[in-house]
Image 1 (cartoon, rainbow, N blue to C red):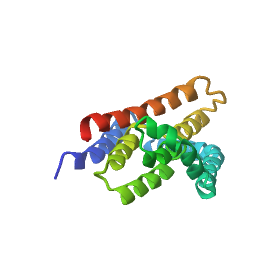
Image 2 (image 1 turned 30 degrees about the horizontal axis):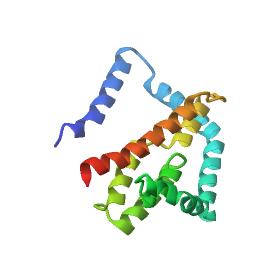
Image 3 (image 1 turned 120 degrees about the horizontal axis):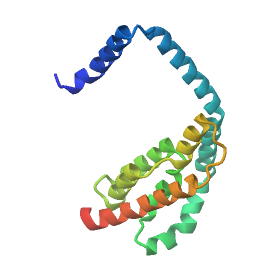
Amino acid sequence: MNLSDWIIPAVTAIIILWGLKSKTDIFGEFAAGAADNLKTCAELLPVLIALITAVGMLRASGAIELLTSLLEDAFARTGFPAQCLPLALIRPFSGSGALAVFEDIIAQWGPDSRPGKIASVMLGSTETTFYTIAVYFGAVRIKRTRHTLPAALIGDLTGFIISVLTVNLMLT
């Protein structure tokens, strides 16, 4: 048995012992925290449903494919593989959508192909920006994201570019 198998039970035991030592109603605190989190979840649900619906509509309508075909030539000149362009377009919006696109790339081109390697690095080095901002800013009721969205999108763009450069320099 590994040490990692004992971490969660050990942390749980420490929390219970700490609560008993400090005479805290552990179950009451747990229930209150769960109730607060359910309220937060209920407040975030409309935003998440709208985001998931929008991504589904983009994929089903063919808008991603249309945008990919329009941008394909410009990106091909920079060395960015056209096969990874749908991943770069959907990743800031949806993790599950990006995973589906990633699986398509791996199924069509293979994990050891250049597009497969670039897609793997891209998926691991970028974020679902709009989803993350919607969840975290919505949880604390911040309406204006100010510089967060442009900075995060620049970070994603950097991740996409560096993914291509890294694979070109190190893995091909």
